[in-house]
Image (cartoon, rainbow, N blue to C red; front, side, top):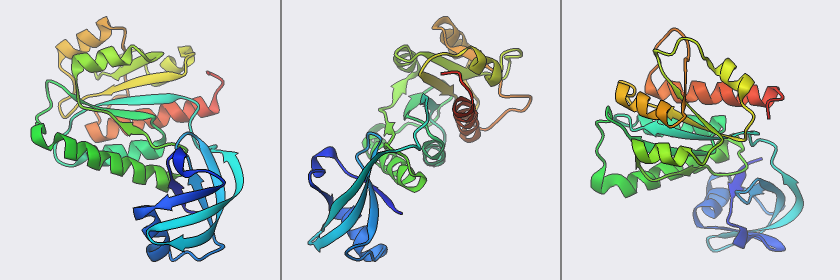
Length: 245
C-alpha cells in the first residue's frame, strides 16, 4: 500500500489528506472510495485507512487500524555531510533517507567549493522535499529533517548533543566500524562525511579534540556520495542485527 504523511492536526476520527497528496491519490494513483492507504503521522505511528470520499483538493479517509511503524532503525543517525558539488547532495539525501538516517545537516568545510548564498533557502526546501519523497518510497515512519547549513565548528558543537560521533578518515589504520560498534552503547550517532577532497588535517584534528572518533572504511578511498551511504548502511544493519543497544 502507498504511504502518505500528514500533520497530527489532520488526524481526528477521520484523516484529512490535502492538496498535492490528495491530487496524487485521485489523479495519479486513481484510487477509488473504499480502497486502502497507509497514513503516517511522521512520529512513527501508521494508520491503515479506507478512502471515505473525495472533496475538492481533499481526501477523507476512515481509520481502520493504528499501529507502530516497524521500519524505523533502533539508532538515530545524524549525517553531517560536507557540501558536495553539483547535484550530489540530492542523491546523498535520497539514498541515506532510504537507508534510515534520522537527520541530515549540510556542512560548509574547507574543501567545500559550493556557495549557495541567496539560493540556500530554495535548496533547503528542495532537499526537504527529496527527503519526504524518499521517506514515502521506503516506508519510513518519519520524515528526516534537513538542517540549516552549518560551519564545521557549528557541526562539531551540535554533535555533542549525540551519544557519540565518528569521522571516516583514510589515515586511520586501527579502528573500523566493527570495532566502534562493539564498544557503542548509546542511542544516537553523528557521522561526519567530507566533501570532495575529504576533510583537511586541521578539521580532523579539531574533530578528534572534540571527541569525534576517527574510523577507517577500508583500504579504498570512497567518493563523498558513497561514504555516507556505506557508513549509514553498515551502522544500521549491525545495530538491527546485534544486541549493542
